Image 1 (cartoon, rainbow, N blue to C red):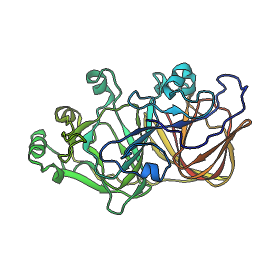
Image 2: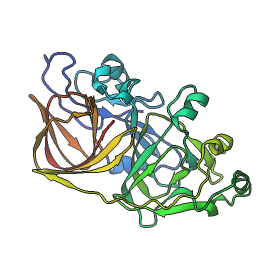
Image 3: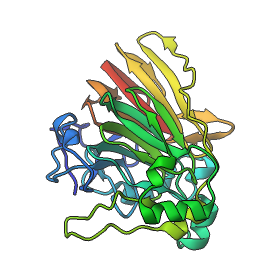
Image 4: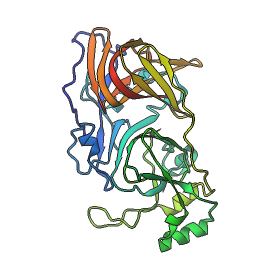
Amino acid sequence: MYTTNRNLSWKPEGKPECSREPFMLSPAGKDYLWGGNRLNEDFAKGIDLTPLAETWECSTHPDGPSLVATGEWKGQTLTEVIRRHPEYLGTHPRAADGLPILIKLIDAKKDLSVQVHPDDEYAREHENGSLGKTEMWYVLDATKDAKLIYGFYHDMEEETIRKSLADGTVEKYLQKIPVRKGDVFFIPAGQVHAIGAGALIAEIQENSNLTYRLYDYNRVDQKGHPRALHIDKALEVANRKGSAAPRQPMRVLRFRPGVADELLCRCKYFEVSRVLLNTERVRQMAQVQAGSNSFQVLLCTEGCGMFFWEDASQPFYRGDCLFIPADSVPLRIHGNAQMLKVSC
């Protein structure tokens, strides 16, 4: 399900086709049973789902593609636009086969299932050529008792895991980590994990929807059926070693007139920074690194403001998502806001 949640403006007609101008996205929504209502209440998504567990803000995945909400491609899926204009993704090697990332907002009113994702090699071999799934989480908000599961306290034998799943004692082996607003967690493929109740998360991941559920607290779906588990596949790909509790890394804010930013995560799949804006800033958003360039995505997590480029203007609010093609026209931003900036 899609929504265009605000009255969005755009440039005058008559612009040349494929002008490399940014455009806003409208998400697909998911009503998984563990979700809450904060994405509608706090982010004004306007999606008629209860619960609203996830919004797929920037996605070309067939299970939930985003829609273009403004501009010459308004009403088309992001998938269609990128198929028509692959140059929007840039020359980064990971963009050669389409949009390599998927960006979500996640509202965990209840605990998510204990799960694990395969890596690219396993997914290609066993899941019809799909990508695997490495991801990162940025905690937008959390209740004081919110936790996440990150691997096992100590090395585990497969037989021990299977027995504990069968008798319902697996939770005593799972490492639980308190979470706070602003925390960052990197979840590589193969890491057993789960988002706990009370966490509001922005997730940046590979463009994949492969999840192997290991344990789901014996819950049933809306029809009263237990949700499917994938124990055999999960144990084939899971890291069964004891995991050190993840520590929050030292983060360095870089200040420039009107804006500051800090690197949150850089891996071979994506790069994510937090941008703090408190005035107007003119900048060319497209990055050029090692002879390649990349699209960028800006997801507003707090505040509001206005984007300007050439003779166009576009307001943005908390929860809005802007796609910036590679080699975009220069973008000017005015406002008081925090954003996640994502590229590959």
